[in-house]
Structures are given as structure tokens and as C-alpha cells.
Image (cartoon, rainbow, N blue to C red; front, side, top):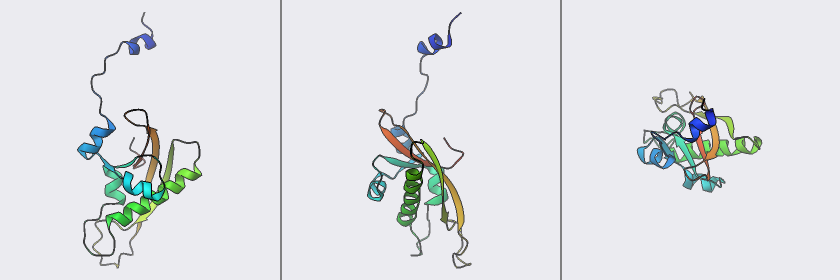
Length: 137
């Protein structure tokens, strides 16, 4: 009888999907440049779902933009991470005006977007952070 450890030790990887590939494919959105300005010391990316829910802004109305919305997400994530010392995942939230708001209500319809910040090993074992929706991993 083969032990589980022996089975996995001899197992062949069928498929692997790296963080670098996810960034190239657009599954992850790199936010490292802005994140370093906000005080992060490791590379940061957002999942496409988190980006769409909290950062994406498709209107050129001068009231909001993606740079400002990204800053808000990163700032709130950084403070949540500082409060959760020693944990590899922390939940936090931001208030955002939905991207599909028609503006008729004077942009008063802000809603809460729940997010999670996860620190984990990158492709080469280096620490990286990913901001995602709570049900993503």
C-alpha cells in the first residue's frame, strides 16, 4: 500500500498557472506602483472581480476616477493589514459609488464593497499581496 506522502512525492504536475501569467492575462491587475506609494512593501495585485467592484470607473465625469478609487482600496487594505498583525488574510471594506450609477441621485448611492487582502508566496516564494472579493481565493 502506498502512503499519501509517497503518492504526492511521485505525482506529476499536469497544469500550473502562475501569478505572472494571471497578470499578463488580466485575471489579476497589478497595483504595485500605487501600492508602494501608499506604504506597501511587497507587490500588490487585485483580482479582476475586486477591480470591477471597487476601482473600475467608466465615466469621464470628473467626479471620480480609477486612480482615486484604487488609492482608497489600497489605503483601507493597508490599515486593515496593520490591525491584523500575524494573519495572512484580512477582510476589510470600502464605500464606493457603483460604476453603473447614472448620477441622477447626485452620487449619493454609495455602497459597501467587502474585500479581502491576502499575503502569500509569489511564483518564486517571495511575499505578494492580493486584494480580492471575500469568496475568491
